[in-house]
Image 1 (cartoon, rainbow, N blue to C red):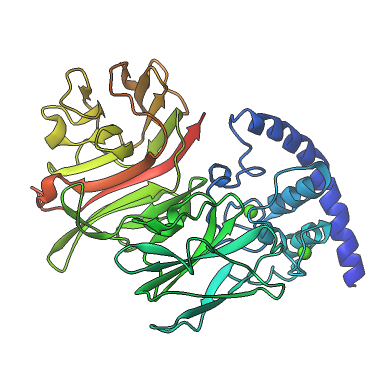
Image 2 (cartoon, rainbow, N blue to C red):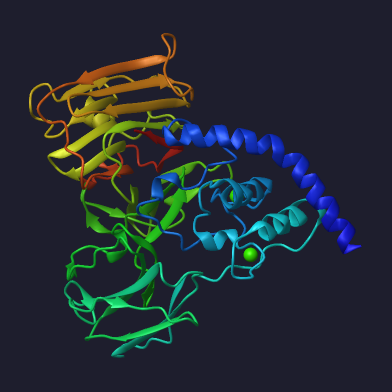
Length: 437
Ligand SMILES: [Ca+2]
Ligand SMILES: [Ca+2]
């Protein structure tokens, strides 16, 4: 019976895969040019190849789109037979949990999807700190990776800053064949174990969370994870959290009330009032994208936010290396929206305009070395037309940011940390974020 089932599954699979493989090859060609990617076949976390956090991958979800279906079987076949993209992480391609990623994993997925075969086993977390106690001077853990030669562990201890452990001269902790690792450490208040690839540069100290560096695949932290990340719109985002931080100062929360993804994969940012505090929200892309076309689509009105509420999509490195699209009655009065290169007070750096009462709009800025072209339009088409365009502006001034340390950020916050004038909680819903070179 099982044999028949397997045979049926494989035949079905081959019937399905021949046309799909052909379109996959086309898709790979377009991928190389960084144009639109076939939604089902190549929607891996493409933007994260250089700076990838794969902690919460799903076993069998080879293409990293969050679910296990036939496109993952196709993705694995593509990888195994025609040199397609590697599953990300490779461990996600090991659907049957036998320690390698090959055609049997594609068959396993087809079996599961079409004829009720077993689901992929729960994948082990990529890195774990094990049995650590405050005051310990040795850190032990596990790394559930298929190829221990491609990854290392780097320990960071936090006191007043983050310090690499056990020493600057010996920053690496190597994973043993059985997946365990351990190393010594100087005293610490907080401990982070990074799983890094071979591109990672350790250095000696950090003033920011060590998980944010290029080459970090995943991390664990003791006593708890102090930063939340999530996958959305093919990228990895960090949620800002802290009291009286800029802009504002405001309270930024990583609570699921303030930042969450709905069943249609839309990102919700919310300002809410709890325990006598107005909590704001901000998400930060985990790496720099540089020059290119940045587009985001919005599924909520931006013309009727509270007078003190600001909703913004922008790139930021420093207060003078920043370019924003902002929706704010207070900043833009008597308008409700603006494009701005920082510093805003330089003549010619701001363009004010009015957003209509549309619940579906799109916004883009094309950032080049000599200009930034902004567009806002009605609806969710990829580009504006004459009839959908709301506003366009080209900036060619002196303050075009230089790429490097900048991050794409979305936030919803209160001007100067002041309470909402109408006393209402506000929400912004972002359907998607896209970047093309
Ligand atoms: Ca998938
Ligand atoms: Ca396997």
